[in-house]
Length: 285
Image (cartoon, rainbow, N blue to C red):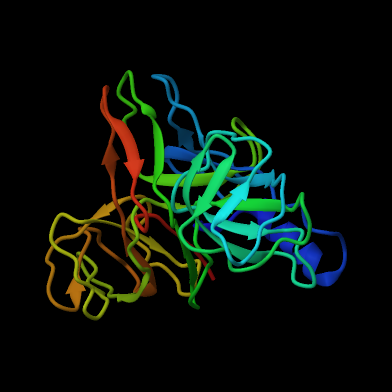
């Protein structure tokens, strides 16, 4: 289900127990999905054809000169083309705290990188290795979340890409390992309880949903989904009240879990799909 994949979860457990080091911070590419994968990274449907290509949203690049806290300017060895305004910049070379945050990208023209303000730290040397990410640092608990701090823009579609409901982060521009995934939108997961009824009535205090909203349910963060009907996939809100609603599915046993409103994005031919900063959220327990 949403969050870290099996591949990422196993690597994290190995790292934390000293069994094996976790993989190095990879190049990360965002994929658009019309049907979601399972955590093993299989079974979903990624957009294909019509000029579609995954977009790189994180990766490493070396500076070619030292930088200081008195300036927002950093000279880089090259410009790979995927680094855009709003990306977070981290210095992986800096000691004694590797991964110290340098700042946020304002512009990157030629090899001249300019931050939105003066660098938060001075470089370790003249060839510090910098990590760029379209996502801001994670925050929160039960679940923790991470949100894109930069706009993420795909090529213009030359045929219909269908209706996209989710995004994945993978470590290659094609195929590769699934790192994590979540549904489109920046809506929070909310705890709910569901009754044994026809249809089951779901209670999620002050949910804010309107009739017709698309939602998904999960027990991944705790709970047991109602039985008797199909509560998987994208469901549609009906009978909305302040604290309750239904999704038109009958239940033969009560249940509970988490519910989240999602975005379903139709991408017809001629449209350039772009996801504004703070419009995508990935969750993890």
